[in-house]
Length: 192
Image 1: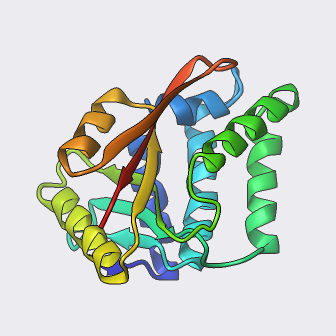
Image 2 (image 1 turned 120 degrees about the vertical axis):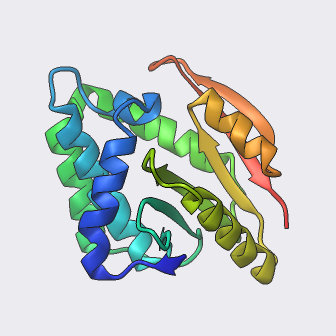
């Protein structure tokens, strides 16, 4: 496992775009009639920049799996990050849906500790032929959290993923259905 470099942006975006083509939470952000693949790619570019600035983009040694996991209270405001997020919103989210999406994101954030002193496991993507890459990233991130003495928080909208997280020591501490999008979220925590 290694930290991403600026040259890895295309690799990370490609893996994420491929793997999130059927993710309900990601797809619910993109307005009907918009190019879903382009929307996912735009979101992946924003996520890469946000996590890269926080030293939180991890790549497996075979470059077939990526994890976006960072210390939540690391990094501050970035104009470039804000502009990428705004670009995604303008191009791929219907403006009438923006208030409900912002409310959903605020609700999700409020389910985690206010002090921000934890690792946030935002995205994970592994290509079908990734082999042991997923385990490499999991073990590497668990070691980072253990060395720093910090818990890891995440959420998922894919029930199969929830079960996988639980198998690896995460506990589901809340389940919530977004009433506007009818997407279920499971909130999980892994203590050190």
